[in-house]
Length: 315
Image 1: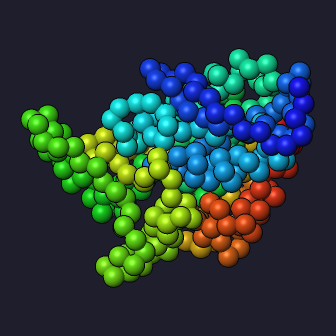
Image 2 (image 1 turned 90 degrees about the vertical axis):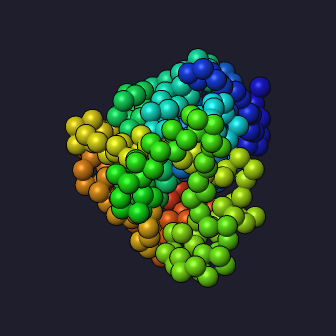
């Protein structure tokens, strides 16, 4: 049966040992008797599908005629997995393949036309997933970051060995009965940040996005369970992209640099990737968080992403 407007269906699809929550955005005039190109949309680090990957990019991609699937990472959002607030690169990367496993069983999905769009830290995981899962035919990163790199840099105060020692001590303490430690990666408010000398554009804008009505969501808490963040210190989203990232690639960044390094890391990814068909789009006047939800920057990102996917996911 055809529909005339965007329709969103929430599903719980099987993951490793728990369900992965996802919203499927269907284009206007969707016809279940036909097959469609599908774009998997992945949210930022410590976030959820209600924050930019679904409500902004998933919706817009459906309006452009694609089926779009925004999912919550394992241990986050409405997806299963314990303990909560776990940001584990192995699980985050494998989630993409479980989502695709579900999609290829759906009669309206063209299994040969699956792409990925991912934002911030989700983009780093998407890079790794695209190298592994060859069912992904095209990749777009928006304000993409590399959480492993950041864990060795600012997230560990540029002392990853000290962080790993602290994780080890905390694991021992928790094994002996101490309460778990959850780190909120952001200040409680913009005012608090400024009062305490935190002036970086990404820190301030992230706080404004996640800690106010602009982007706050019940299950998008930007927090890490401290003892579970150790694997990130040894992980790198861009490991071996010179060999294995061969699919078409679109990198979208803003030209305002900040602590989360999407500008620098996006240029690095573009330069290093083996993709023969790759594009770099720099949105002038845009910061990392402008590309989450601000109308003009996100429109510029989509002006590049939509024709990119139409070209590379064509029948």
